Image 1 (cartoon, rainbow, N blue to C red):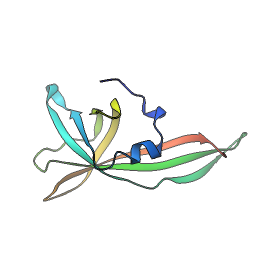
Image 2 (image 1 turned 30 degrees about the vertical axis):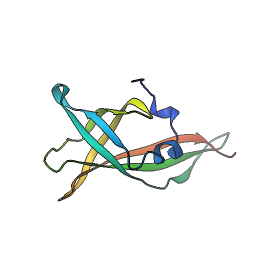
Image 3 (image 1 turned 30 degrees about the horizontal axis):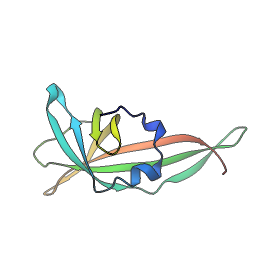
Image 4 (image 1 turned 135 degrees about the vertical axis):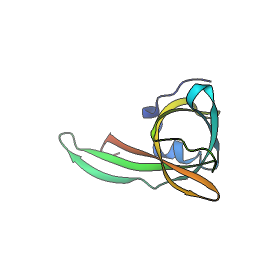
Length: 113
């Protein structure tokens, strides 16, 4: 599977992956499967400067198995449509359906069309 830099993926391309599964490489080659549940709508805030630039802020929410907690940290994720990439994420909640994880994106981007 090809390695991808997440800087090359925008919000729209990641949001299209909602309801797909990702394989997470955990410690000692052990893997865990997560489902992308939600991609929060991006918020844009001015960063100033010349030329004008903006920050794009959004998050991805994943659901994993209830019996396996992944601590906050960097993980290698694999997804067939995207490829392999590194992502920093952490657990945010647990219920009978599983453990939810969040990855937050704060990206500086050029303003305007």
